Length: 265
Ligand SMILES: NC(=O)c1ccc[n+]([C@@H]2O[C@H](COP(=O)([O-])OP(=O)(O)OC[C@H]3O[C@@H](n4cnc5c(N)ncnc54)[C@H](OP(=O)(O)O)[C@@H]3O)[C@@H](O)[C@H]2O)c1
Image (cartoon, rainbow, N blue to C red; front, side):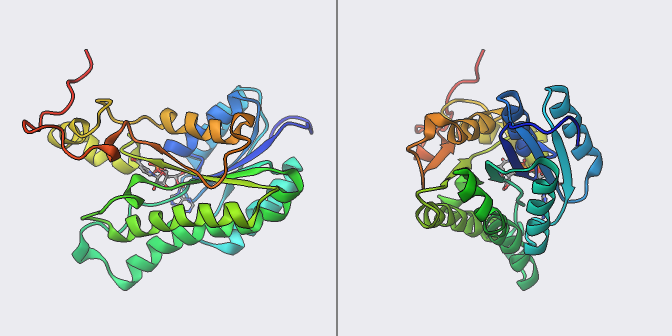
């Protein structure tokens, strides 16, 4: 942690060290929040992102923990309150990409995915609820368009993310009127999670063709949506799902040629 006590808003971001979580942390820091970044094992990335937040003049803490653990969620909240004094926003972002091909789904892998991707957001919000109620704060759950559509791989991940969308709606009602709860559903975003698909030229282009806005998403695209939902501009928005996928999930076919939109110049 760095800096003196302040009255700035404090945001907790799970999976805040890399990828989409890192972009969310940096966007919130630019808008004046202090940050707590939860990560699992990669301390190097967590400290690098923390240094970027600190360079924006914000206070920042990193806390290691397992997203699917209630004990770790409670410790994350305790350490945040001890270090920064308050929590105004929770972004439940940590998640996996599931078990892969359907024949790779086992009892253990399925349970692991549900634990991280579905129970994790619930555990974090449950731990933070008393403080969020006190602060009239808000929470944002990072789901996926996989939770809206049929999946042919990582069915456990898609089912978990569908559960996250349900959780956001249920918690929005349960925690109202003090706390707003919303979900963001990204489509294809370039991060470590999707690096193998993005590295493969044929796969990269096949995905791009399905996206009306004709490019893969960037972590910053998701961060801007989160920042909006966290802001006063969304003060009458709760239980909503904001889809950030360049229009992919509203398309049926990209025309008979299957060419899809042209690549941007
Ligand atoms: N990338 C996409 O195309 C895409 C699309 C839709 C939805 N999403 C969702 O967006 C979220 C972020 O994805 P991403 O692409 O940014 O992933 P990423 O680049 O792989 O980063 C994952 C982050 O979450 C942390 N993490 C992973 N598993 C964890 C666990 N069990 N406990 C605690 N922390 C954990 C990682 O910490 P360590 O570095 O310590 O491992 C890291 O900070 C996920 O929920 C994902 O399902 C991503």
